[in-house]
Image 1 (cartoon, rainbow, N blue to C red):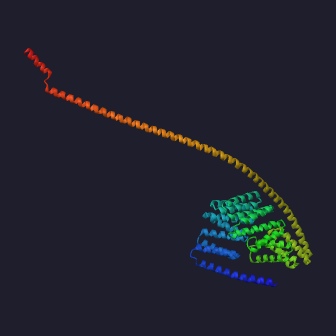
Image 2: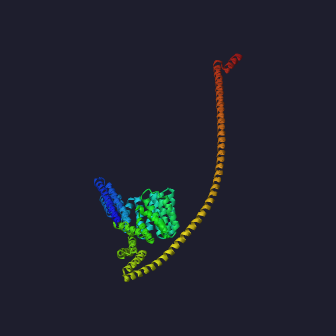
Image 3: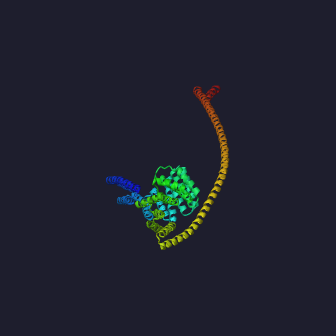
Length: 533
């Protein structure tokens, strides 16, 4: 008792110290917001303030800060930041399990993102809407939104985001029991992640594959891929830590399903040491179940009380409330504290009825039967005994359907693996044939290159020959032209000399004719002299 009092006092003082530190952070952020001159800076600070509230599990504070940011963005007509605030509100309500509210804010953000062609925002909103639909079990819409997220991310060409969307699409296929398509899509995502050495996404894909193997009852394969997830996980940020805890939980769940409770407890306890992650509450609930099976009532009560205390301080794990209440009732039943167990068992039964969780309703009605039997109220005990049988019959019927579905999934998955192995063998043969063809093509290309080189050499030789002949012909033509010119010149000179000689002769003749008396005149005079008149 003293130990519990000291522990409670220590937790109270620690909570007081943490609250004081949180208030200082909030005051600092408020001061920065009031002093900020730019509207975009103020909006960013409001979003940071909301993120801080979220980390401290203050959902109301986070929502209020985001509404303030949205109001400012709308008043200043900052479309991008209005879309961002709707995006953040969608994330906030999704994380707290209000999927319909989250979806309405995501739709508003999507309208703005489409208008501004903000591809990164669009793909994120499509992804969140897909997750919301997945949680609301509207798997046809899940597939549509996840497919839209993948198409948008391919346009944006962000390799890491593309891989995440491949994984989300695979999970959507898995929820629709389209196992083959889910596995193929996961392996496509894995191939892309390995290509860019994205260790975080490789770890996430292996973790998702583990969940898929769990659904079809392949527990050894499930454990194998979860171990790979842990091996590849770089543990760089909060998301990596969340993937790690999910993998640890998956290993625990696999061992739990195989009734190896010691191994399951080992992995659950590793999660409980960190007090972090989305699987923290289900890990506590499963751990309590194992402790009750092993009849370790004190430890079971400690962790059952821890779960109830967490549920009273935050709504983050509200979806696990029914199991936590049932575990608390089971602990009190083990201690024969039947009257104290009644409100917990009734709460579990009521919540399970609202969620249509037949398995939990069966367990809760069984617990209520034991409780009223222990208190001596046999009428109510009989009523809940009949309820238990009715739920058990319903569970058997649904489990038979699930078993048939599981066998069908196993068959289709095994068939796919067989066809994959055949296709792998065919691929090897095709690779060998392709290699032979490539070698033949290389030889042909080599011979073709040699032939082309030979042809080029012949062409070059022919061109050299033609060039030489052309030069020789040119030289001969030049020589002939020169000889022709020389001949013409000699002929011209000879002609000129002949002309000069003729001119001289003609000139001398003219002189001669000018100086010598005409022959007719002489003949006339001679005639006169001879004949005397």
